[in-house]
Picture 1 (cartoon, rainbow, N blue to C red):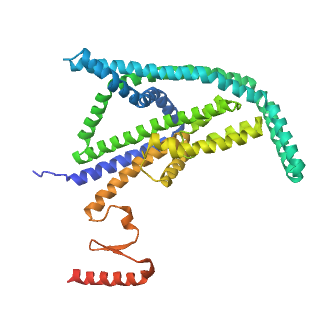
Picture 2: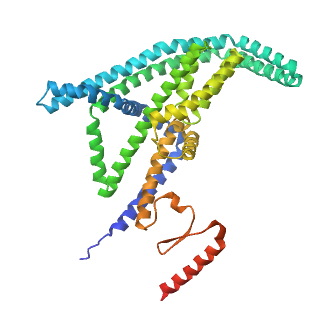
Picture 3: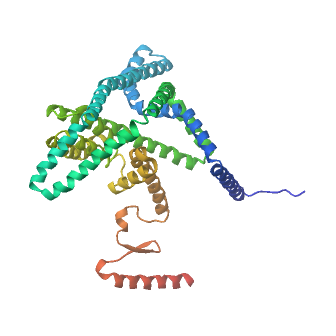
Length: 437
């Protein structure tokens, strides 16, 4: 009787080929039934939204929970339950979650209660005073025209064209479709109620995640070590730990940094009595979360709003934002964030552009930490490979390397490149002859 023995490598080759074939069939089926796939995707997104949002909320609130547990409730639980470790942990976790949620709701409700009415009034004022802005801009153009008639002849038609286009949009698009707008508002209210329910469920999910975070982490590690070899599992655990440090430090640090920038902007605008301090400070603070481009994204509309009200205020605010962003980039940001990402500015800019191109605003925010994790993974892989080949690990060692011959680095001098190349070629030929012999 013949016994068939399947070699392990052929088994894995066949399994991978089968998986690729199945994925190709599923992808082809998805393209043929794109409408059904979109419906299914919508249902899945609605079903998973509370879980994903709750997990993200728990992750963001985890530093606050750790602070309460470490500084307040673990010492108190040790005094109340001296001989019962289980009760100590349960007491500190329950009290910590309660205080964390209290802080979260106080900040959320207090922020909405204080900020939302002022933002609404600012937006309403901007809309109702639109003719005043037109008159102010027209008066400024007339003053400019006195000294520069040619520039005035160009700016007046541009301003009239913009104003007429806005009026035409209101009269032709908004007013005739007011019934549709009301219907969309009604459906938006229904959607808002559903969103509110999802938020409530997300908060409940975050409570369970914070309460059982050690168990969930342990289950993840257990699955990792059961599915992968010990070496690969150790690498995955270290990589996830590094990603947690990068994302946690970067996101929480950026939130604190943006809050400080928004608060400083509000204090300045209140002191100098500028228009719309709450609205503009909110724009500056929120957009500051995006690295590099965030300050410009928030500053440009804010400056335009102030220019329409008062040209002098717009110019002063532009100078202030420039100084504020320099302080943030050189003083406040480094103090809070430090060198969390550990990659150069060029790579951060690259990550923001690519992330924004694929995923919009979320991609611009998370592109830098995601690329930092990928960069660390590639660096670790390169380090292992270079060590196995007895090559240097420092990047500076490769600046003037021409080639490596028998584990020896051959460098070239900038002033004698041709001579060094001849020496290298001669050495290579000699080595080949020795190898043949």
